[in-house]
Length: 314
Image (tube, rainbow, N blue to C red; front, top):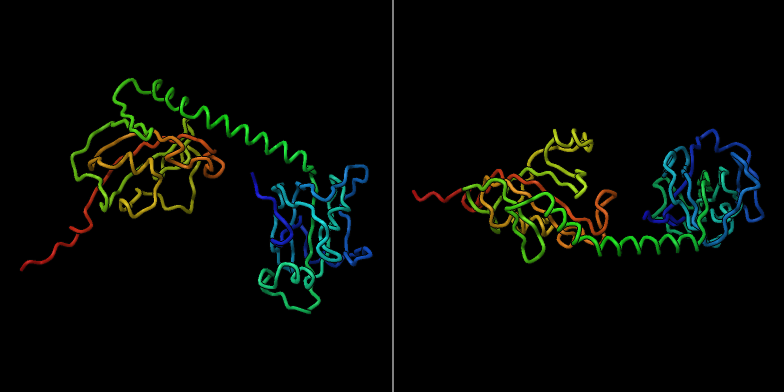
């Protein structure tokens, strides 16, 4: 679940430009300047404690400091005003479906969050202004958030309970023989046994791999062509075999246990329970909590770094 952003992180707004900053504003009694971009007066308004979903951008001078324009998300946890004319006062003025621009005194914000968290061009006492634009798409009450959290907890408990059974069933369905199960719950399938140097602590290993979930979704690979075929190619990533030193490079335990003791030239598949991978936290949007992983690995090279440059006995 995305972290709820709060004012102290200096977030906010939707498509404001330098010219629009100087259009006519109204002012509240506390000094908050505001302007409506769109109105929806009959819609619900937020209350303190609600979480707002929408788009926001923050501008300081002519620079956009932060923006979620085009990517609606949870943008605010509405709180009591921290100082006269702060953004929370403005948020409480809004209705669902509206867009507003707010102008907040930069000095007031700096006093609250600290000058070190202000934009580089901030000058104390300079009379500068931070412009926020907020497009409010939805309002989530504390009760809705609590219900959502309960649902997430229930989902995680179900995933935790069913993971071992699902992994075992997957192995039975896809492999009729040649499967080794370790005491830790890792499954190893040797497709081709090599005959080179063995993977042990301190050895330098070079390997190609494809990582996928039980439903066949590839989430990572060292192979450019596979990444392109699976639609996960990252243009700026330098694809190529993974190189690491056993015991010195942090890898998930399931990988280390599966590859340990295998000789150079081995091709294998390891099926890893989440307890030996990313566990209850998961990793990103693809690897959810309590997700078993599958790695197809080719051990291309195993070397002993200590023997790379043998001493000259002459």
